[in-house]
Image 1: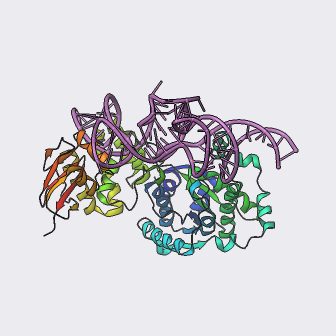
Image 2: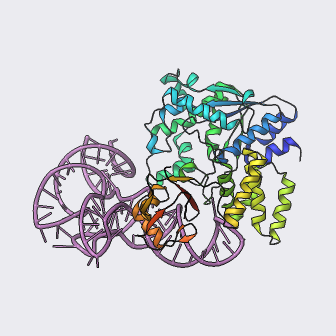
Image 3: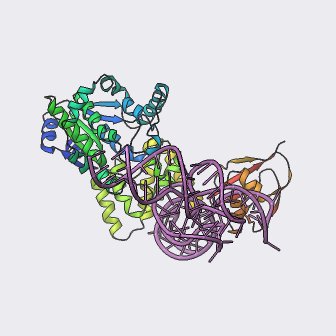
Length: 394
RNA sequence: GGGCAGAUACCCAAGUGGCCAACGGGGGCUGACUGUAAAUCAGCUGGCUUCGCCUUCGGGAGUUCGAAUCUCUCUCUGCCCA
């Protein structure tokens, strides 16, 4: 498959309008590819990476990536998250988050070639008259057509009026940037299309719109930090590898397509192999390795894989065990030690875990919740798959 | 502006005077098993000086021997009418 066809199809759902975009790409137009960045959440995960990788693909073909920082939007607050509705981000916070963001995306795209802009620059000066003008391009029925809104409306969930304005703001960004293409997740389709509507209203050629597949999280729901099912780009290699291993088996193939550079032909071969009943674990390990390699390099990925094989598959002790500092030698109630070690949140929970047979000290199971532990330097405490090594003052 | 309904633990959601630290899901943790931290099955999931005690059911005040459950008030949300 040639590079252009790959960009247009791999991990993508919709391309509006496909022929139009393909024509422009084939005849060598240098396109401005827009993507909106939310400065409220600097922690990026693999789900975000799918879009960023798509941007990278455009970049590799010589197109310009235009990243819009939604500082204006951030000051109003993300409407989909009620708790932050009134949360205002200070300028410092936006810059702080942005610095983090740049660090993270530089793992995927060439940040030095990116054209950055802040949407407060053009959204801020808009007058009420302008906003009404923008709003006149849409109807309430169109807004309510959005699945998101319909669901919330019929479920009796609140919808802030300002939430209707989000697509307008995002769409106006496209006008201001004169973007040729905008990329986003499938849930962004409506907002992306709003860009086309407004660009047309301003006499510009409407941008092409591309949505990428939604990556599912560890639990099969959409990958999202708030669901706690995400693999963060910042995750240490061992965690990243381990989390991929806990993906449901049926996500192995989609994840290969969305999160790695393995050619589609090879992925098809793996899929065929899985059909024959090969143990999925083998390919999941390959997947975990590839993904970890992308963000941490081959050496780290190799170490993560070895750690997994040792700790999970062979159930041996990890090489690096965090310390728990105790301020005196002698006898300690086991529950106190577990809490100090951060292995349980409370003594009640600690007792419970002891009763469940989850607690081992130097490989000996502790079964009495009132057990008094005579602590020793270097003693290893284990709860489930978590280990702590006791250190005493010298 | 008026009328009605609702606010329960991390999330959803039962409970309408004592049997409620509060049914059931989900999530999380642990155990068993395994092909992995998948799947499946089981236990646990407010705190503590744990055969008992203490603090929870939007906030505050009250009725009662006793309240998540009744009353008043405040805050927030949804629906209907305008």
